[in-house]
Length: 482
Ligand SMILES: [Zn+2]
Image (cartoon, rainbow, N blue to C red; front, side):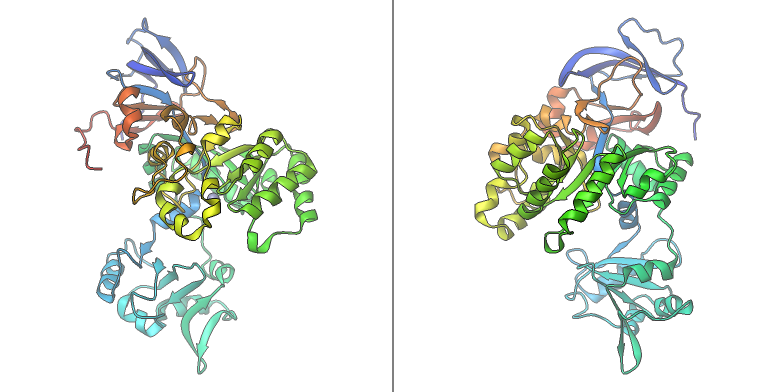
């Protein structure tokens, strides 16, 4: 690997400033910070000079809601169901092609592939040489081959959820994820591959919103940062316990409250948890995807009094009254505009028509003065922020249907969702003297980029002064295939 430059001069870039594209100028990066902005900078002290040719230079994108470990695990798993895998021959072929050695982790299995739920013996024919655990797409069941059964039962007793037929284990395991994790002794995954993928998208910062994040996961993030496997700056949301972890290479974020409409926690307990979070000086981040959940969340905030940094995650369904209440309480909302594209067709079928106007509001939150930020929620959706920005502007589903077109944002507002400051979502990060050098350079001026939001336009990504994605010397990419 080439020695990273100590200083970097980006010439003739269009600078993002105050919510729009400004004049063309030069920017000098030294020791991890912006050391100069202007047209009179000399190239002498720079180790590397890049000619931006009028491309847009903006603060590096921050994904405000992501599950990094989940995304990494997903990337290392084999997809075993429709639409890519629809029969036994295709299943055999993807399992044969599984990378690495040892365990194969399959996901997305559906009964249509092998005409039902295969037992261990059947799976042995599809994965004869390696232990296989294949998750049903419902997430509630694992299907194990014989090698997997042997390994998992070697160190202890079978759990109640491991199905038996006439005394013998079938290999079907129901609702035993905690036991499985323990039996596997699984370590959190390596982040390097997905971190590079995110860098190519122009992302220099992440807020991990996994509710279970605690001391152990914080230590893993710290070591992944220290080893250079994780290139992005990290804010960790999670448990109350997270506050006890040593903040080493990451920043402490909100306490995550994950509400489930079908199984809401007792109100008093939730209020106590919310108070404890505020006592730690931490905000609340409350997961709300239904009408009932947002009503519950607003009632909790009414009881404890909201901090300006408290936030609602998703706000998938919000009536005008809910929007008004969120604005009154001064809470921020972290939105996923791409859910309209990726899941919109399903929503139009599943969600009651009376609620369609309340789906994934954007413009009405913005007009109410609510601080907003964008997050991918990967691996539950694509990690690509550019596709999310496209959806925020178009409000179109994958099949081209429109959802709440009045909720569309301008391209400038859409981009701003990824430029919010993770420590204060009402604040936009800027390229300023002395600021941390987290940068994203596009190959295009804003006038072009705003029309297409194409990830292929990301030419260079700089995180904490280091180049983490360098597309400058690559041959031109084929465009317009979309
Ligand atoms: Zn999430």
